[in-house]
Image (cartoon, rainbow over all chains, first blue to last red; front, side, top):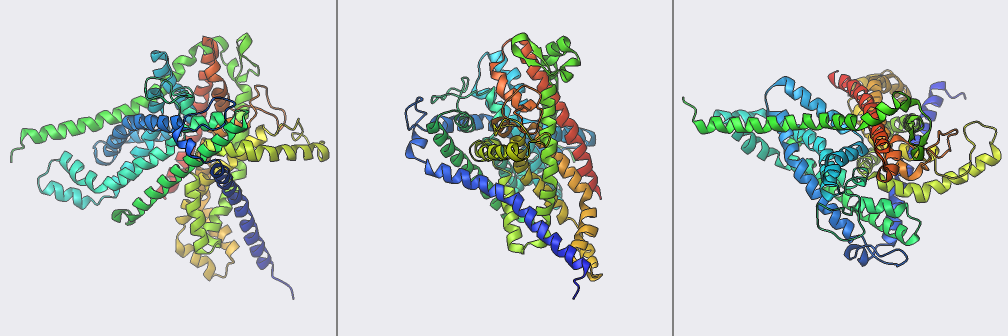
Length: 280
Length: 304
């Protein structure tokens, strides 16, 4: 019996697609698996409670990096969140077509600016005049990177809110700004909040913008106007160092960062999926 | 009815705050360009257009040419994207058409999560797991395929090829998620129509899905290319950090992003710093152009 040609092509196409998918997905699983296994092996209590040990000594942790990352992300949030939410409100609530086009264009371009370029700009803008690497400069760099994410997610969420709600508010005699803040913003709060969380998880692992701004440090520091450690910077420095003890700490720190970022992502996805109006 | 002055003020201030935020966003972008341009001026004046074509990068003698890094950036990004296209199209087809729904859903969610993994973690895997394998492949190639051009070279492991592989792996989740979203938009009745006419699954894919999604896939691929161009950490960790023009696919090299990451903190002297900032400006412009093209294609798709 002769097998028809179209059956042969169909079956071989199916095989090739299965194969290519396998090729695409395998390395991704390998990356996560490799970092998880090696990181988990080197997890210790010291990791969370101590700062790095001097070269040659075993032990030591990344407490300074965790604290640094929190401080830098806090600064980034101060810079990025208000501006981002206002920008999103402008795009969804404000009037004027031309201005909106321009802002949207700028946001899209800003989203495509490589992170290392943002780092250089923050260096020119803050490190050079302050004559010192600082956590603030790092925070501003990350804040600029958060901005497009927050603006876009805020706009998208607020656009999903039914216009009947706005109209009802206006019909009741509320001024526009109160409608925007008390009706639209309040209804979209969950969505805006998840957008902010996503933007944090995006920049939490960013290393390039911190290289010339926060610089990194071996010590626990709380001063935002001084160089500061950050978890991703520490991972980078440990990974390219020649010391196996540092590699181990680097793996453990990667695992930590991975867990936090994945957890935030899963949490926000769950929030977004549960929000009633996002189902429409 | 008269409006109370308070209401007018409220709307006025609210509108003002929104406008100010909008203005600030525009200003940030303008500021980025102006600062980069201004700080690049010393290098531009000193080297002129020769900066882009110069092949020597010699900080000791204040000689700076960007050509090797532009080549490094373009070769790694384009090679990575060319390899990404078939993989991401196949995986999206698999998710949408071939896999059992549960498996497709799991892979789909996994891809979204993988897109969130930081570059430096991919780099970590690159250094300790991938580079040794690349080195073995190089030793094998040197033994058995030394006659093939572009594949020879000392087996360092780190180099262009390692950077290309890590870029493929990193851009895949992003590119799959776009391709998958584009494929979600294919109208069901077209697919059902094809099946009703007796088409096999492959014929349906080839005649319905691929033509319908061609522009979306191209746009998504261009946006992924924009990402690959600016990718810094993972590439810096595996590309081998050489300032010479690469001759083969395995040579250690540098991209624009990686040379900046490697040298900016050690740069001394106005000209050196300015040359690096000039590189950042070039990278900014290249990714601006690529991203704009990608966005135009994607917007066209959305309009239909």
